Length: 274
Image 1: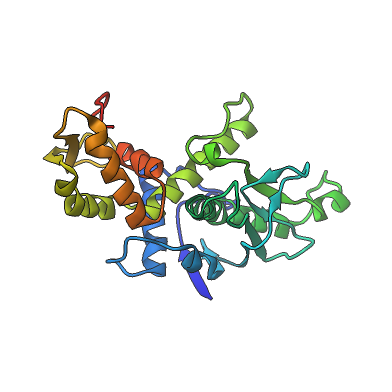
Image 2: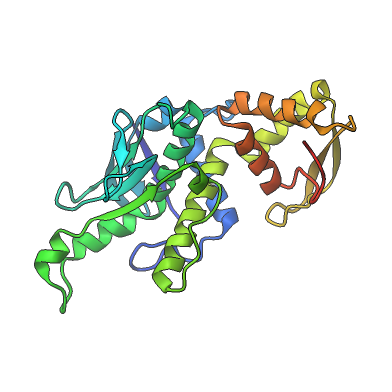
């Protein structure tokens, strides 16, 4: 059982207010520091599932976690996970449900899904709880307001690698950015930049991958950085085994590592790395 305490810029309705990608990264790092030691690379599902209480922007609430049962959406379709808030069930608790390890969900996918849903618990749940506490507005139906539930859903693995489908309305744009934000939180929480750089320094040579140090090519991470290239003319002789070794070290998939490498500017744009 553990408590996670975080703060970030928010509007008077407690929704994130102009929180940039780099700020999401910092919030994820702050959460990570409260969960495990700084010299540990892999953040396990057991550690994440032990989070029982949250205090975000001064709003305290419980986190009800379920990783033991298959998860379905409102239509009864099987999905990977949901983060939801139902004031009828509890006015001060968010529910985080992730489908257990099964044929459609590997251990790595379950871990990634949990971290993504935790992002929603951090960035969406405080506003849901605050809004429900305000009661019905002047022109709202009190009966409907009292039973209003809030939910963010992860339907499949593809959802964890890109933002939600584009839409034209303000609501659709808000949902799309919320999903992108949860993905950035997930990536930074499970594979932080400095941890990945340290791991690459440990493993690159044995996989015939060259490290070139210089100015960072990632716009969100200025200063000194590194880029990676394979020594072999056949990329799979170097980068692919490195990705697999790093994935094992962090408890995620090689694809997850590749996405973080791109995000942190470790791979030259357009280069054939594997």
